[in-house]
Structures are given as structure tokens and as C-alpha cells.
Length: 90
Image 1 (cartoon, rainbow, N blue to C red):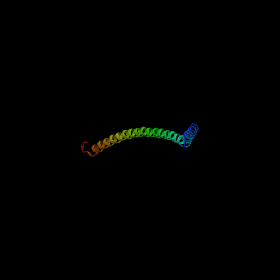
Image 2: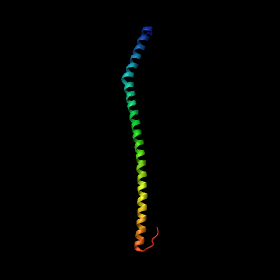
Image 3: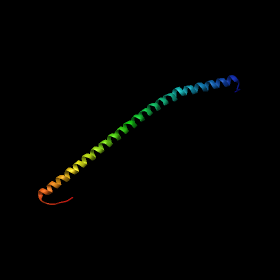
Image 4: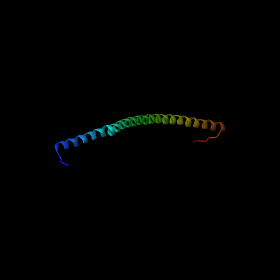
């Protein structure tokens, strides 16, 4: 095959068309999918952050309630010890 200017232009035209077709058939849909996945990952990160915040609040509430219950139990033991007449000290 002789490489004349016509042949080179024809080959370059075919390669350019093939690259354009590949871009529209393969690369554009992949880019769209990547964008959707990035958005989904961002939403998941936001949800995780919200859950972590909520869990921190829940743990703090549980700790506060536990302190109150422990204080109440200690007070109840103290009162029971005085009723029984024993002097059990914790």
C-alpha cells in the first residue's frame, strides 16, 4: 500500500471517526456513571456523619441517665441501711 496524501487523510479520517465514536459510546456514559457515583458517595458520607452525631448525642444521654440511676441506687441503699439499722458503707 502506497502512503499517498489521500491514503493518509483517509486513515486519519477513519481514526478520528473511531475515536469520536468511542468517546460518545464508551467515555461519555462512563463519565455520567462516575458523576452519579460521586454524588452517591457524598450522600453516604453525609448520612454517616449525621449518624455519628446522633450516636454521640445518644451516648451522652445514656451516660447522664446512668449517672442519675447510680446516684438513685446509692441513695436507696443508704436509706435501706439506715432502716435496717446496719451501717454498710460502700
